[in-house]
Amino acid sequence: MTAQFTLKPDAAVDLHMHTTYSDGRWPAQRLIDYLAEQGFDLVAVTDHDRVDKVAEIQALAAAKNLPVLPGVEMSTQWHGHVAHLLCYGFDPAQSALKPLTEKIVALQLENTHEVNEELRKRGYDFPRQEALLAEHDGKLHRPSDNAYLLMEHQHTSDWQTAMRMIREAGFHSILATMGEAVEAAHQSGATCIMAHPGRRDSNFTYYDTALLDQLRAEVPIDGIEVYHPYHNEESRQMYLDYVNKHNLLLSTGSDSHGIASRMPIKYRAETSRPLLARLGVTVA
Image (cartoon, rainbow, N blue to C red; front, side, top):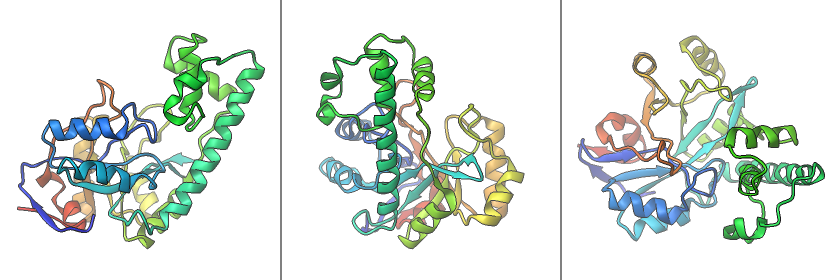
């Protein structure tokens, strides 16, 4: 987005959401329709490792008079620790993030096909794959497709078991290093925010202030996603104190995936005022 504009302090903002272009449940059009109907004033759609759909999503939103910041959530790691990165404010047509994301997506797809083949060798058949994946011409396009196929063919009844089954069949995360992602983002003029550092489930590292100090000594991130549904009040205050102490930017995001427990959230624009100012949005 290149246009400069102004938001009121209480304008509704959500800077972290996903569509079916990554691991969300809603297609882009449905998400944009919902956000427009609910009266959001500014959003960022941050599909994992996808910058190729940013312009398309912005065009859908423009038809609804909804400003959308260019954004992506990079799936990265730092010394073996999972460390997702929210990148905002790049040109999707000319970005150093594009070749990096293309490499990650290609490797993810290669692994997805390998897992599908292994599942079939283990006796799991998917006769309805073409119909179930009709949105993508019946073809696999993301790692979670295999888990979805297992559930829809009643090879298992719950998502956790399906994910365990695909891991046993060879699924593994394909991650860039956080350092190379930040470098590519900064080359593209983007701002880099560490996503949900306080997430505590088994797939993520919990970043306390000491670990954040170590990371920042090596990787020049610009800020932290302080307000996230998985952060409790203690974590939010800890990260708020940290960004204030170190003069970092902070962001506010729902991490919405289009399911009841992860819907978009109307955060006040003034909460992320310095970040929005960096991205050309005045809050006044």
